[in-house]
Length: 262
Image 1 (cartoon, rainbow, N blue to C red):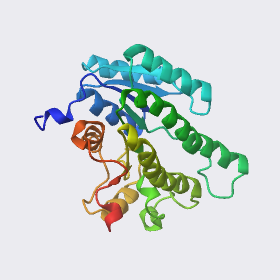
Image 2 (image 1 turned 120 degrees about the vertical axis):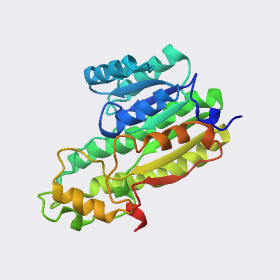
Image 3 (image 1 turned 30 degrees about the vertical axis):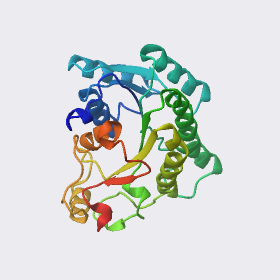
C-alpha cells in the first residue's frame, strides 16, 4: 500500500465523544478530512448539531448524536444509532470529560463520585460496548484522550502572576493518570481481536481567556516554547486511527511540545 494511502479513512466510521469542544473540534475535523464518517456525541445535542453543520458545509461527513455518559441507556442508544446508520464502528475517541470536583481537594464524596462515574466508569463501559461491535469486524482503533497532567504533578510556577492554580484538585490528575494504564490494559485484552488501543496526552491549549503571565510561564516550560494550537492534534489522530499505525497499540504518547520531557 502506498504510504499516503495508509492514512486514509474512507469508508470508516468514527465516534468522538465530546467532539464539539476544546480539542474535540480539531479531532473531528482531522478524521473527517481523512475521509471518515464522524459522529460527534455529547449531552448538548444542539451544540453538536451546530458544529456538525459547519463541518458538513466544508464538505466533511460529520453528524451529531446525543450522549450522556452518566447514563448507561444513553450510551447504548448512541452506539445503536451509529451502527444503524453506517453499519459499523471503526474508531472510538474517548474525549469527553466532566469538570466536577475540580475546585480543590476538600470535596464531598458525592462530588468525587460524579466525576469518577463519567470520567472513569463510563469510559470503561463505552469502550467495552464499542469493542463488542469492533470484535465482529475483527478490527478497530480506540484512542483515549488523556492529558499531560496524567503524566506529571502540578507545576505551580506556571501560575505565578495569575489567580489560577491556587487550589488544585487531585481528581483530574487521578483520572488522567489512570487512563495511562487503562490504555495498556485494554490493548492487552482487545489485541487478540485486532483492536488497537492507544492514548495521547495533550499539553495546554492556547485560548484567548488565558492570562498573559500563564502563557509566558507555561511556554517557557515547554521545549517548543508555546502552547498547543488548533491543529496540533490532527496528525497524531489520523495516524492512530489509520492503517499507518497498524502495529502500534498500548502506547501513551505525549503531544505537549516537550513539556513532560523536561
